[in-house]
Image 1 (cartoon, rainbow, N blue to C red):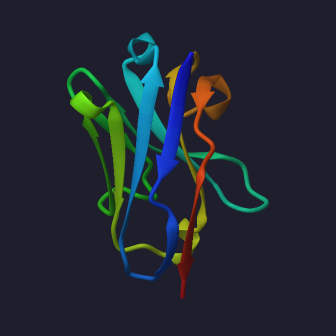
Image 2 (cartoon, rainbow, N blue to C red):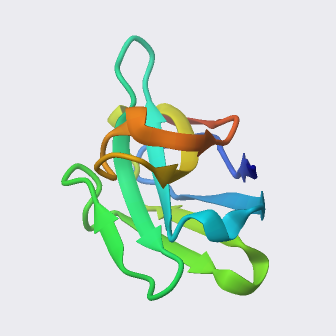
Length: 123
């Protein structure tokens, strides 16, 4: 089992920044990949970014490329999502997830999820 706990969400004005954290515990060695997804009200869950624990290889959705940065601290078993130049369209519940069984962008294949943290961007 892996436990994931997100934090750092909140309300911010458009153009502002937030940093989300995802602390992992338990059998964290079961997967080399940690990902962030988001789900806006009435929409499907969508891939945001991912990073490998071993070499820090990163992947981003086109919608956040150049604005969001994913990073990790292996000593703390924590992954971060730095979000800059936020837009109202970024409003969503943000989830971290690990142990994908399918393509890393496919949320249906992940075994472990955090509880989510709300990010609201006002215009």
